[in-house]
Image (cartoon, rainbow, N blue to C red; front, side, top):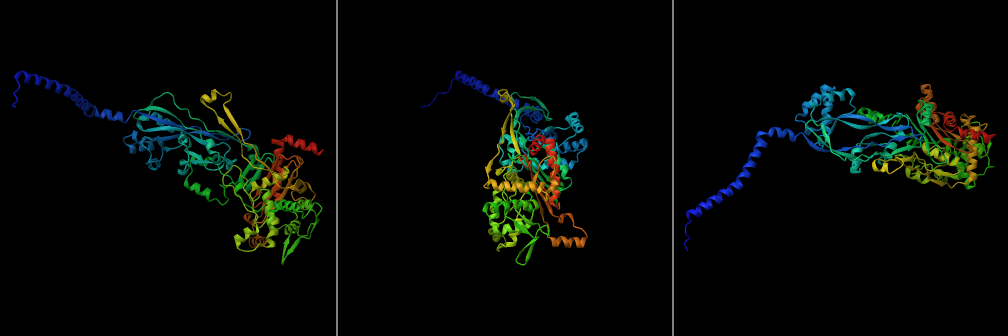
Length: 631
């Protein structure tokens, strides 16, 4: 059917409705177009600057690292502020120009600034990049005064580790350096900001998870020069790391370092009743502040390749033959096996013959007839040669193990060395041959393939001193939780202390045997013929045992002296002395190891100085009680 055309009235109505609809749609679109023109054309430059300027940023705040104290709360390691120059690349249009201005104004080499930027080129957007550490106060003032000249540049205050006593206890504390990628992966997100540098050795490393604090954070608004305009409320307060109190007495530590002088080696002093290490000295030492300040590659290589092994903690990593300090092991094995008793004697004529070879005593004229206590007093080689042949190397190994020799002590430090006490099986695997009797004789006086560490020997001395208890050595006395915020308000004290309980176990050595070893060590110092008489003092009764270890054979020594007229220090014998005091109620056990110290009596002389200092300055009460008991 044909549709009829619209009337004039209908056309006019349609036109009015079409105009209304177009107006409804067109006006908003016109507004949008105008607004876009206004934003992008008329005020485009202005808004572009603003888009590069004010921003809200979430800033992580590092928590202070825990402080390390000695046993008397003397600070060994703490945090000091370090002012660091940082840049946010996105906050400046011309990084190159800004770096040039910084270089000229602050007198910092331009290439150094560029290297720092290049090293962090993959850093996330708006991430502050560290350009230069340890700004001087003058440099800080210049940046503050001319801040507008340096868009994107700011100064961050970053805690830096500082070791108040410098080289003292360096190997115990360890040092700090930048976190590695492997370490970063193991770290919780909440500790990332607080752990940009971490402990790499010593207590700093072993107890790193306690020392690192928990990050805090705050929201701030910054302008186009990077300056903070305002801070938003309710920041998250950083939680400081936990403080650590060591067992070390810094007075004794410094005194021993002074007594040692320029002598290389190691000294350890320990409480034989609870295993607390009172002093641990390894020489030469380094200054851990060098690592905190930033070390050049050249300096690192110098330390790493140092011939005296300055980075090694010789107290736990140095491996040496123990010399005659080992003789109590042989004595204990023979007594426990029933091979000898306190009345058994051997005659020393100055040597024993093994096959065609003579094995000499240090006293070539001989000592005559000696029992076990007298043999320890005189440190007679022949007595222990003859005894060891009846014991055998495998049993010597077994009894050395009972005293903890050839095994790690599990002290709370990294990379402790186990050293070695040989057996027939070990020798066969190592050299594909059969163990010989001559090697047993060498082992009986702590030579040949026998090796120990200083920490093992002080532990061994402690077992004899405390009548047969192995106590795990420890360096940490307590760990302290520093409470903040609500925790602090809810607690009467602002610190929570956790004490490190000693681990004790009875050693499988009879009390009768230990008493004979004790008598031998007392006589070694106090006896008429004692080789350790240089350790004798009127202040306290000292028990001890000397040890001298060959570095080169006697034939080689004679050859060097003949060719050069004298023996270079590096070819001289190593010197040992282990001791404890007072001899009746021991409060301290010590080991002194002198590299190329020539004679055990030299180590005994230094031990005397250590004991006299300890019992006059640190524990005079024990010395007085010992004198009263003697009377």
